[in-house]
Amino acid sequence: MSLQRSCLYSIEPIGIGSVEVESLSSYISRLAAAHCITVGDIMTHLIAPELGKKYINNIVSIGGNGFYKSSSAINGYGIIAEDFIKVIESLTCRKDILETTFVNCRGLVPFRGLLKSSRYWCPSCFQADLESKQTVYERLSWTLQPFHKCIIHDRLLESTCPFCKSCMYTLERKSIPGYCTKCFYWLGNYRDKQSTGIYCRKINDSMRTFFLEFTNLSFERDCVSHSLSFYIENNFEGSLTKAADFFGYSKSTLWGWKEGANLAPLKALIDITSKLQLNLSSFISVEKSRMILTDNCINKISPSERTKKNHDKIKDFLGIAITEKKPYSLGEIAKLMECDRKLLTQMYPNECRQIKKFYLNSIEVKKKNKSEIMKKNINNAVYTLKKQGTYPTRAKIEGIIGNGMLREEKYRSYWEKKTNHLLMGDNNKVINLKENGRADCE
Image 1 (cartoon, one colour):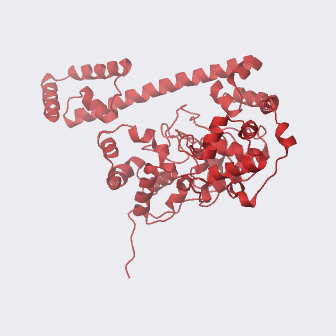
Image 2: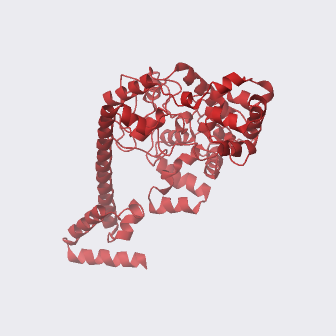
Image 3: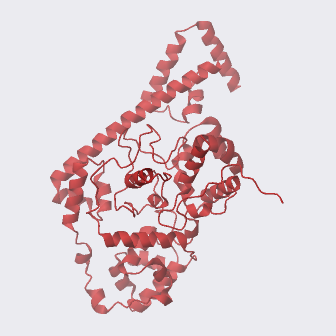
């Protein structure tokens, strides 16, 4: 009897079937760490050859972050997710890799509005993993766009390293769960004060239940359309106007979802099930949950009441953002608080000025860090080419650090300065480097 042997360790994904299920991007990072290599090494020597995608092979050969910028798609349900699932399953001989993604949600919600475009994390989860001596990993729930806080610790998710102020892609060449990919600073519980008192515990419990069903149930393409049709007919007397007023969406938008012309985004699906006071499974299985909304219940929800905001909650959040110097933009805060930015600036002008100041300062810090990293990459590229006996032309440098990276004047000037510094050396050696560079181009 022959046993199939895996190319990589067949480590088990963490939290399968639970609200703390691991994401596929985290699993790939853990695979790399288990073999004492980087994610970039696995991509270059194992994943890219198996995928056979031309654009990924180009990135592997010439460098750049083209793929990593869109690496959030690995955790979704599109072609990229499917390709990575097949390759990782083949390399590990496992059959449960698809459960670290949202492949079961195809046909339920559109891809747009599903995933965050960058890396988010909960410091409390990282710290809990470390202190309990468990494996540190990244949860799949952190990748969902409408999920702004951890469904376990009721804490706002972070997206900026507290040490170097860098933002990160979902997956990078040197990704390590729990650590910054730029400065390798520990991203665990670096703040004592948490924002647990701002949000309603009941809402957090409902989000936890929603995520559990969202990741574990199977859905048909038109299930939301059928459910909306049912509730509009039975609870709103078939009136699209009443239903639109109740849910807070335009008639044309609701009609498109009802007729199946468009899929309702994830945030809208959360809003609809929440306002109907139904679990996702109950909403989909209309025959099992037929909630009756009376005329009084519908009529009492007037537009003025729908837009009424909890100012105590908003004020508390602004206070915490100022105390902890969180680098939020006013637009992000308005989105978190589900209110208009104009309302914030009119009602809380002093708080908004302080928050704006923190945000602008954080942008300056990010620009400075980006500039330092770019100059370091240029130095490394020049050194590498010089060591190979190749003249550091712009094309050669961009082939290492990424196409178009020298478009900005300051980086181009820095490259020219480094090149001129090279020219100050042995002229014969420079001539040889130039000849090698021309030979490579030919």
